[in-house]
Structure formats: C-alpha cells, structure tokens
Image (cartoon, each protein chain N blue to C red):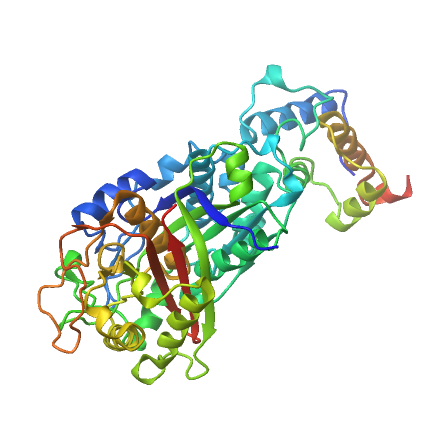
Length: 100
Length: 404
C-alpha cells in the first residue's frame, strides 16, 4: 500500500492539472475541478488510463486496470475533480477499491 | 426518390502540394511529385522512389490537429483529416446549422499505414492508430456528425467506391451531406518489397521525375504515391438552400467486378469496358457525350494496354477524339485514395476548362494510339467526364461527373 502524506492530494492534483494543460493545450485558468474532460477540453477516456500508469509508477501501486474498470463503471469519472478523487481512492485502497 | 448529387467542396494532399490550389497549379504545369524516398532507408530495395507527400506536412498538420489527437493518428490519417477540414471549409458548410443526423462520412481506406515507416507509435495508441475506420471516425467526431460513418475497402478503387456509396445515400434521400474520399500511403519497406516481387513498380531510380510514364512504350510499372482527397457530396436542394457554390454534379457511377484474376485485368480489357459501358448506361448518357476521361493509367504494361482497348471498344472512332490523361504520371498511384483524388482533378478540369497532361509521354507505344494529352495541359470545355479506377481483386469503378 502506498504511503499517504498530507501532501499526496496536492501532488496528485499538480500531476493531473499539468497533464491536462499539456495534452489538451489549455491554460491553468481554463480548467478547474468542475471541468468536464471530454465535453469542455476535448479530452478522451484514454487519458485516465495514462494518468493511472503515471501514478502506478510514482506510488508503486498494486492495482489492476481491470479492477479500476469495474470501479469506474459504478463510479463514473467525468470531471477533473472526480478524477483526482478516484485517483486518491486508488492510491489508498489499491486492488481493494472494488470493496468500497 | 432520385435527388441530384452535387459537389460543394474539395480538399486534397498529394506529392504536388498540401492543398487544392497548390495541387492544381502544379498539375496544370505538368510537374512531377516523384522523388527519392526519405521516409525510411530504401537503398536495399529495387524501387527507391515514390511520390511522397512533402516533408513539411507534419509541421503543416499541427495547425489542424491538436497535440493530443496527433499522438493517436498516423501520418496518413492526419492527411485525411486535414483534407477533410479543408474540404469542409471550401464548401462553406456550418454543420451546426444543419441536421447532423443527415450528415455522414464514407471513406475508402485500405489501411491507416501504421507501418514500420510510421514514427512515434506507442503501445497505448497502437490500436487507435491502426483501426481501419479511424479516418472516418475522427472526421465524424470532429464535426459531431450523427449520420452513417464507415469505411469501405476495395484496394485501388476504395475511395471511388466510397464516392458511389455516398452518392446513393444522397440520391435515395437517406442523407443530405456525405463527406467522401480517402487517404493512403504504402511508402514503407515491406509493401514496396512486395510490389517489387510482383514486378509492378517502376525501378527508374536514377530519374525519379521521369519514372511514371503511362501509355509510353518504355513504361516499366507504376510509381507509388501517397495522399488524401475529400469531396463534399450534397443534395442539390441542400446546396441551394444554403447558397453554396456547386462545382460539379456527380451524375452517377458504375461498380463492377472482373470475376477473373486477383491481380491481372481481364483479357483485352473486357472487364474495364463493361465498367465504362455500365457507367454510361447508369448515367443515361451516350459515348458521344463524354468530353474527357481521367484514366486509371498506371504506367504498367497491362493496365495501359487494356484500358486503351476498353476505351476503343466502348467509344469506337470517338475514342481517338476524347482527351484522356493520367494524373498518376505526376502524383504516382495513390492506391486507396486514387479514385477520389483523380475525381477531384477531373472536377477541377471541368471547372477550369483545362485538361491536365500525361507527362513523360515521350516515346509513344504504337499499340496505344489515343489522345493522351502528352506532356502539356490543354484548354478544353468539358460537359461530361469519366474518372476510372481499377483495382487488384477485380474491383472496377467509373465515376461520371457533369458540369454544373
């Protein structure tokens, strides 16, 4: 299980925001936690998977993509804020996330 | 319901340019787009030349494709996407003012060319880059169109088949606008090696610009080209309602099969003649109505001979009067994209009253004695024109275009 610190959420947010600014060619002022990834900034569903790969390496997570798939079917990720929340849950619970 | 189908927009990318205007200027001048291959190391291949799209395309495409989407597209998918955006701009269509459920995309695509010549493919984007429906999907997504959206494959006749299917969607009232066309590139080591083993390609490496020489005595095979072409097909009613410029009418077409051989055309051009006869019949016109033929004209021994024989069979003595030219002499054989690119050139010929030449026709073949418009473009009024496309597998397509 990854070690969570009080800075983890801000670290995750920074990675997520930088990722969307880079990939979607948008300024920081154009996005916030309520930004819809597909509708507002022309993002796509693969972006979440790419971010998960980044966080798997960053926090040495034990999580299968299939497990995440099962979780997000019931808990859709549409906004940047939802993505950050889901990432935090994955970091904390890893493969046990489906038991929540 | 039998509605008129008109052409209201066009976009194209070939070795002669990255947009419609540059292509037309170079085609009029009889320029060759053939040059040594630099997409990969071709020095061990028998054929080391191709009509490659200019190197500046990738930088040019950045104006059209977002960084994110760019990672998910092959180079040839980007060509198609850029040509589509140009064609839509050319047409003046604002899809937000149209019923998007009646707007579709039908493309002729052999593959997206996610080959060894493709740069930057990662495991994450391999599937999206490779799927053969990617081009039509990206165009449909960009404009949020809700009508039919798919890809048809019939080798070198693919994009002509797409035009035919788009025509039917509109003429039968199932759609108002269909974006048709395609893109292709087989400029990669494996496919050139394969075509070399079929003895299908020119090996005139020392004089690339002279290598594609349709209808000439010394023709030695086709030259691979690459590119994209997109046509906006629209019902006449829709075009008139929005005061669009109408460049030509797509009158009709014929799609036929040779039923003969996977590679060779039927003896004496019988299959080709059947396709041309069928197109004239479907369009309700006589041989004497035809003012120009944009030939398939590959520069292979058999195609040029049999296409000539077929034209003589269908048109009789008239065959000697009709200007016939091969765009492939300048832009090479763009494979799946050839049908639409050559149809666009035909429309431009109708609009500009100018027939583009067959370049490199310096040594005539005594057997091939028709009016091939050698080397220099020719002013010529065109009311009806044909664009021929024939493919390995025996897929034949003839598109009938009419001045509007």
